Image (cartoon, rainbow, N blue to C red; front, side):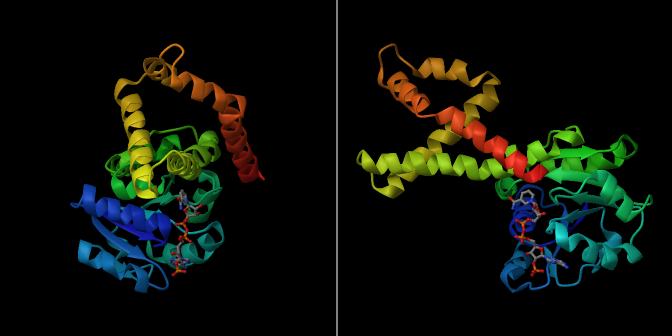
Amino acid sequence: MRVHIIGGGNLGVSIALGLSKFSPENQVTITRRNTSSILYLEKLGATVSTNNIHQIQEADVIILTIKPYQVDVVLDEILPVISNKIIASAVSGLSIENLQKKIGDLNSAVRIMPNIAAQFGASATCIAFHEKDKEKAQDVVSLFQSLGTAPIIDEKLMDAATVLAASGTAFALRYIRASMQAGIEIGFDWQTALAISAQTVKGAAEMLLEEKVHPEQLIDRVTTPQGCTIAGLNEMEMHGFSSSLIRGIKTSLKQIKG
Ligand SMILES: NC(=O)c1ccc[n+]([C@@H]2O[C@H](COP(=O)([O-])OP(=O)(O)OC[C@H]3O[C@@H](n4cnc5c(N)ncnc54)[C@H](OP(=O)(O)O)[C@@H]3O)[C@@H](O)[C@H]2O)c1
């Protein structure tokens, strides 16, 4: 496929990097107004341009990774030269209905919510589309399946997906940072504490994804009666470990919904 990414910032670049590594058969064009910081992508096979309509007619999928306030300017530029295109938008808060109104019936609107782990083929990209675009959206689904998992969700859960899958990256990193800080306090240098904390989280996540069980089932395997793990877990819960995370996620969701 020819993939045209408009908005070569944090997310756009992570998608371009992920595609170059995990599905190099796709041809990627990526644009932004100031390309100096992303020219290195050319060495990985992507075309980098300041021109949003450069080779856009040949694109199979156009991905929007721009900020909400940049959407109208970009669409004004590209719409006169495209038709029958799939436009996959990662723009938070932009509904399929509103995007479809903007792009007209000749193009298909798909909503995606990836995260920056796309760069490592490890994004959880939630995808939503209207029934009429089901077939065309499969291209987007398979593209993002090559960059991790790509669950199809009901659009009404897209804000929740933004919090769980995109903001969730920051939440998980904050857990790792806290674990690392504790690691330093109990004797490790920060590099070793970071390596152990990050790998432990990766291992826990891999077990869950592989075994498809509830986390408590795995926790049960780690918690010996009267042991150190259950003592630590109970102390954390006493100080609001789970409830602070749940409250944080719900606050992020409230913030999105405005
Ligand atoms: N970051 C994430 O983890 C994440 C996850 C899911 C969804 N999202 C959503 O994805 C969107 C992008 O987020 P981001 O974090 O990647 O933002 P970002 O780093 O600011 O990237 C946006 C990019 O768009 C470029 N841009 C602005 N106007 C443009 C134009 N007219 N034509 C072409 N490129 C233009 C900007 O570069 P120039 O100024 O050089 O043009 C910038 O590099 C947002 O809507 C965000 O909500 C982000």
